[in-house]
Length: 358
Image 1 (cartoon, rainbow, N blue to C red):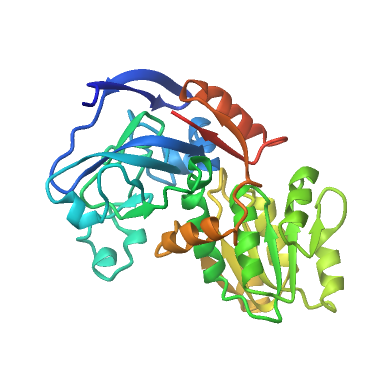
Image 2: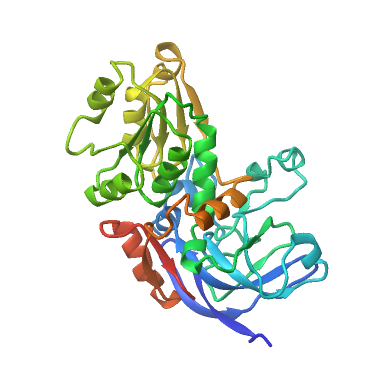
């Protein structure tokens, strides 16, 4: 029998995160309740905690986060309760490990009806919206409209917590349409960038280049398959890439730094008719000369958002070792250590993926 309450981190506002005792969610028809086994800290969680305008709203962007809300959208849990019809609808049983995709689609808007559910107009993402309370808690409910996947029981929970960021990485790499003779540059070797690197390696490009300002992250990138690692603080990476490509520039540039500098850098080093994939949640606007995109280079500028149709691949890649999850999880903490987890993730000096184990 389940207890009536649970520990959960609740976001009440910018910088106002509290560990509280709250009721365990009750499940209705088609809903799933899981006990959280592991939950990750994302760069967007750090930016939310610090009040990034694109999350909390500004004159230009409406507020997206809806406090009070339980944060957390990287997770895996064990099914402990099922509403009427939930087992048949979602394909999970009591005791199964399970994950829900980070967006809870409405299934009614134009995008959902077309199968483009990850761009749902209502756009309820776990950990940010009232309808989709997150995973920084002992228990979590998957609403009836969730997209649920069963997770193999033999996948370690801290590795299974990487399924969501890996799915995002897979989607971004697929957006890039990498070809066999491409020179591919991935800027930003955080956890998702390192996932992108490993997925891009599976595409067998001619050259795979990793960029980051942190030397330790570049060392990991080299171990995980980068043909070349470059630091913008140590050398002119634009000139280096141009030199390596006979002055043309890279074929594909994937931006995952979260910094406007990464955007400027990419537009300079990418070749004419190249493919630029933007993934990051920016803490501040990036201002660029758009004539580079059109008049000068006629670039394909592609966005990448969430991980649609990629979760089964992410689970398979982690299970068969195509993606090395162990190399990415550097810190595990209890739920009570959420403030420390945020601080470690923000500093990023000795950490990659920080995972909490409620």
